[in-house]
Length: 190
Image 1 (cartoon, one colour):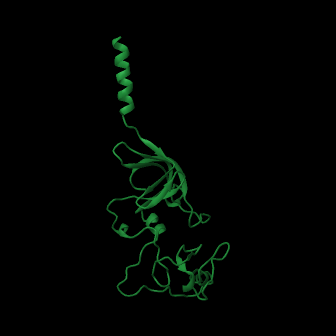
Image 2 (cartoon, one colour):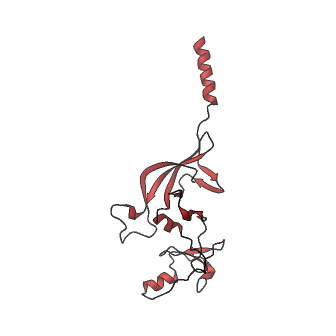
Image 3 (spheres, helix red, strand yellow):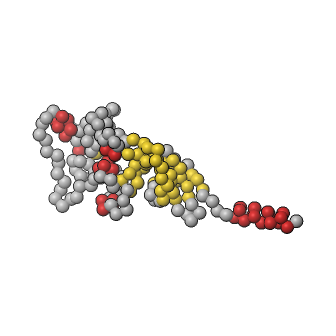
């Protein structure tokens, strides 16, 4: 008789024990993240440039961020407001787009890039932060909330060609990353 009571108590105790809760999508710090999403992760906690909003890239002409539509150059990866281009664009064109600065450079012309207003600090792009080791890139493989309420995700790391034995080769694209088989569990850095 005693073993049945003990077993029943253990089952009740087990049911009371909280467990991890897994999710397909999570809203964290005002942003939605899901399994399969690619995210940037701070590589170093003390990275001084990470006080900037990661999602707000500045236009390479007017040096302002904002909600206006921007286009990204497929060569330099710089962002440009449609209205800041000469001539201005009314809509984002289909296919690849290369800015006038990169076009001129390819033709061997000397062209001076716009300079930011005096006293304004240039904000680095996410790609620049990735290349300077302030950020890592990862694919979210699973998301969960621990018993203590903290959010975690398991990420599969990406590396840039420079981090491989062969290094960056002429055939590597500017946006090219390699997904590795290395995983890590990361807390609250969604």
